[in-house]
Image (cartoon, rainbow, N blue to C red; front, side, top):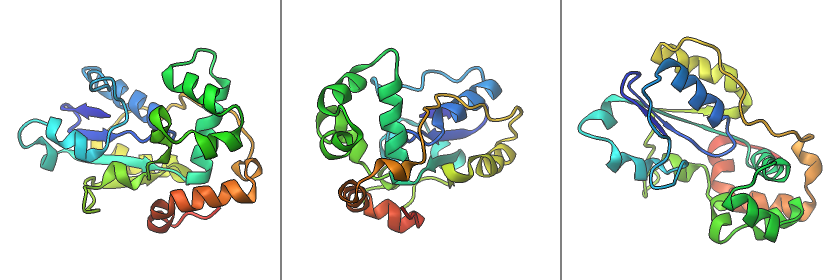
Length: 197
């Protein structure tokens, strides 16, 4: 997450949606932005960020997030971990329980892997499903949708591309079984955002 008083915005950073690039752009426009971590957490639900925001900032600030096709997102996530030179606790967990992409989809779902099972809607809605952010952009049209954010916040600079993982088209990573697992697990995202395999 990023909270910028200078820009008047709150960025809800969902994993593997271009968020590191967005954070870099926000910092280039507001060097005073502090840590993007709260109690060791970088990726928080908006409903958990809201109580951390002081005074009347929550209704006044522009709140935004980006989402990504769930099938593509999981491939990118797995490839990022598999290609990492230095691993963190999550990377060590994935390497231990999921040496293949198929195992990642099937088994990296508990403990540290639970984060791979949250629908992206969980990051931007409250417990009743009401939207808590003002704008949800799409990774698939990142440049165009970031144009909306840049205009709204008056941002200078172009969006950098940070934290990129190399992989082929996501469809080639799936079996019928793993494709269906993702379809069921992320049914709410697929329904709300209209994603197709």
